[in-house]
Amino acid sequence: MALDGNEITEVPAAIGALASMEQCYLSNNLLETVPPELGDCVSLETLWLNGNQLKKIPKEIGNLVALETLDLSDNQLETLPKELANLDLLEQLDIYNNAFTKMPKALAPDGDMEEEGCNIVREEP
Image (tube, rainbow, N blue to C red; front, side, top):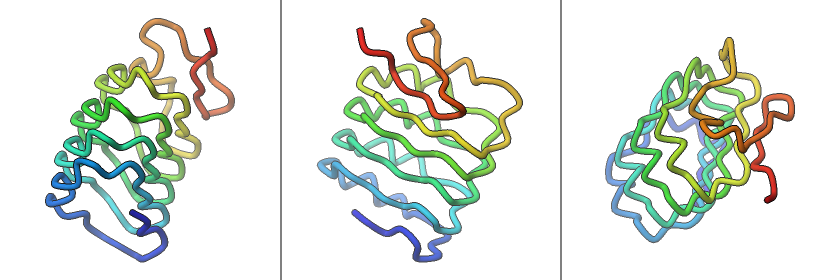
């Protein structure tokens, strides 16, 4: 689903019914929140939420077990949910240009991720 650059201000809870959706592009809109039901989209491999006005990400994002790429850059995030640690397949996480004052603990609970600027990539074994 590609809805980037449309000045969208709200994502309906019904997005959770799209359990087989693999890609979701909601970049460059006017989103301040995303519904917890986004966590029901368990087939998501790519999720772009960059360029919005997000201040918080719901903990249900930790249910996206197939997620490989998550772009949260250019928002107003101060923290991330600890449930991000559940995303074992996550290879790329972009959190550049947010309101973080320190590296969120949710990103590297086992120290197996490295910081490249504010772009996080999982190290190859």
